Length: 113
Length: 113
Image (cartoon, rainbow over all chains, first blue to last red; front, side, top):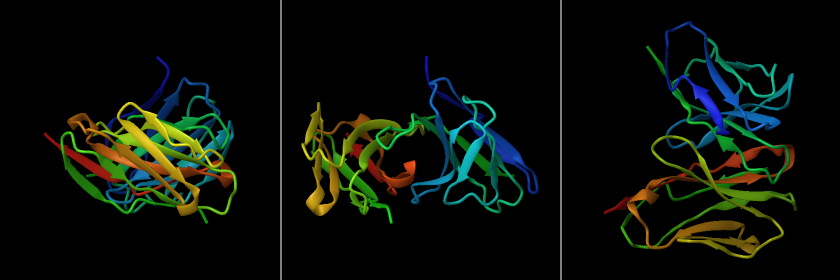
């Protein structure tokens, strides 16, 4: 089945630790996105990539880093510089173009120990 | 600036009632697309519908219907004869310049049996 796989589903981070969230898609989409969702704030864009080896900052990129070495993979690292990382993280992918809907994974819930 | 406003934070209805979810958008672009997504408790956002800025025809899909009015910059979503399975958070989104999505803050719908 085609889709987007995010792992793990739940993740716990210790203070001062970097953690990496995985996102893999087999839809052959060119573009991939990372969003953060907090209660009552909707989805906020962290990073996006429209082509391999290229990515752009979204609205809240500080404290996060990404890579896009393969078309199907777009991992997100939450660094120790992100002081409030507890949130629900959603990965999405799409074809490029204004009219293309984004397709989402099941999300990763990150909590601080 | 691009912006999507969903003024209704939470709505509760009794099963079989009709309910309308409001979405108001802002953009200076003449070409743009509007989307609705459903987020059930499992977390994944599910794409429901896309509408382009040049097509103001209303659309009906089963119990769902959408009303797009450029004059009021609104793209409202109506569920007829609501069911418990409709309980979810619903997001409206705008796609325009820069190939980014701009999401509203979501409306949490609870259908009471």
